Length: 312
Image (cartoon, rainbow, N blue to C red; front, side, top):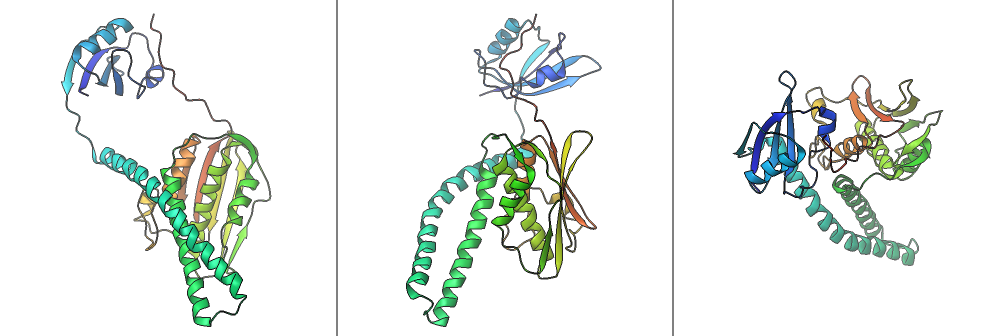
């Protein structure tokens, strides 16, 4: 589909109203708004559009009551960021299919190990028992990698329900193997509000697992805090006593596929960021000590775009 650039006045519309036009399905003329640029000094709007032809754009504006100053066909040069986003989207789609095919054979191996252990009744040769234990750990690691990729690839809408924050945290901790050298200090308070419980469990799991890996074999502590701010925001903090994140990589840790771990997927923190932003929140990190801070709104605004704007 050809790409066009046009320019015209705002005719009383606000930038907020125009935001709703971007990336909607094409209208009856086949016109889709890719991006909008507003020049406040001139009160002029420039639109990057996809359309079958220049004529279809003239008709689109004529029906809406706009008079264009110009319409010209352009070739969009994609930035490195856009190309990376496209590659990640393809990777996510491929990963979903591959992982679906991997789960069945993994389950067969896991069930076979459990059956061997049950039938042997603890009488296995020490060498064989050790090998089976290594296989169990390997399957567990593969499962963690699969979960990372699936959490990143999933794009389902939020399922908002009123939940207690501590319930989501507790479910996350139950499925994590907490080393004996690490103490977890839980919040003494609780907060009830609307969020997607399953997705927030993923955030907790990733942040706590990340903290465990940061502490390593040393004696350490993970402190989790909940706080309801006067602004109505819900603050969640996960602090660890690890050595901290090197300053040179601190700005990159939420980028997809970025990891300093040999066995890491580089998708855990990126998934956290995606889920938090889906909740219209923010996530950040600071050092000395290392603290991940998640800020969530108590009430998520409905940002579902309307499919048309009436222009009088």
